[in-house]
Length: 221
Image (cartoon, rainbow, N blue to C red; front, top):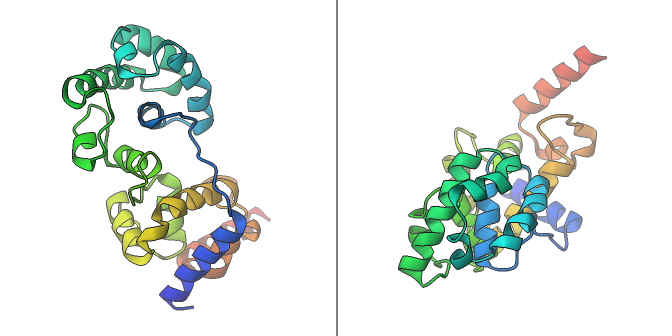
């Protein structure tokens, strides 16, 4: 297959597997999504979804969040990891939302990325999932799969995002990045990978990746 055929194969396969696409992080509005995405850094979505109800029961908006101390937030979110940094970020960004944005999450990459503990990936998730603005947040699953599928050189997530935006139609970015995440978790994980179940990589995978897998598998026999 040439590159365009591989891209089409990826899109069609993912649409067949995920005609409806669940949102990984539970939330009810842009603010709760922003906090959930911030908490998901180096933490599983399952763990975040266990912790956010505890946090949001006390504060599900910036006005209530700033009434909590950084220490109180830290104690609640501790199981998510990086709690000192995340608690300061949550408290700080809540103040900024009140002071600069009337308590609302801004619909702008620029303003979102100015908030404490909010990087480009977090901003991209909020823009795509909360506001429907085309974005292509690249997490570890997307970074891994784009490389396995020989659709990027995979030097870094910045390059992977540029390549994804270049080769996939903009109108499907918001759905596609979620489909790739779910596919990576279910069929093409970093650990416990079974190529026989990974139809996309098995069909269009980078030769060096497939050769390395075959070599490793043969040694395990």
